[in-house]
Image 1: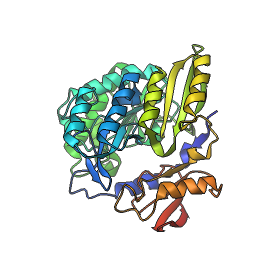
Image 2: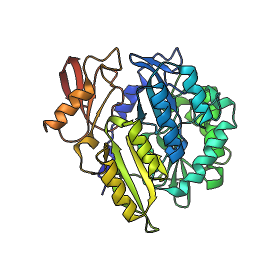
Image 3: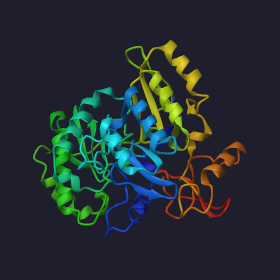
Image 4: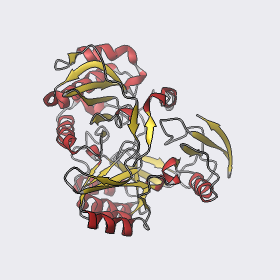
Length: 390
């Protein structure tokens, strides 16, 4: 069974601090398949996969792209997207992304950040509808690449990621989420996609230089007022605890099984990606550095665990690795003062690791840090860290 996280204790201050990072007088640096971030180890190209949905064919294609253009690895992001590092031929990478369906619209390259509860297949049609609605709208192409859309099945997992625009299944309808918090409005299922896109359009008109909706609470009222299909309600849902990342053996109602697997540092080799494709399973990439393989019979599930666990997937919900994260470190970032991932691995191997979430950062930007409380290892030199609670 997955661990439970107290959503009410997740400190908003950690997210608020991240809003101060980056110069708002320029565009945000979130990479895409076209506009890449140039890192120490080469270009970073990111492909958006709505709702984290990956088919075997997509895994094969991305594995080939990682080998041809990058460092041979695929990296899972905290928005449920996938990226390749070490790219030298950026134009060829973009062309391949378009050829394999990862780039349905060049203008919308960086705005299709959609996450959804990974164990809720009933949300998949909504994911597709929202993606189509975004692709059909020209105004949203001006949004920051950090903009996040979220569809929560009612368990609170996606709301805990504090999406800019989202809905939470509640009492037969959907509660609206704006800037990561509930607002006193609800929409019917058929109006979800149009309502979220309308909210995003209005935000684009009002945001100025802000990247995330929570940065500018003074315009939230204007956004809400623009939503014709949103009906005012007296109360908003209360979410006390939410499930942690889905890891392990996850029985489905139809008698089949889903397998949740953690990914160490969010990094898969192209070989592992191809082995995931070989399973033939529909998979969901989650915002928690994990993937879920769906609709597998029990015999096949046993074989999948036996083969993929030695290759690096983590099926043990109690693994220490599920609590430990790290930024790219000195190998891929000029700002990093240490080999954060090597240092983290050494700490895990020595069992010298605090309880709870732990994050190793190479500099004060703390890229990839958890949204909930964690123990912060901040590099002050090569292999040297200042440790604090955040």
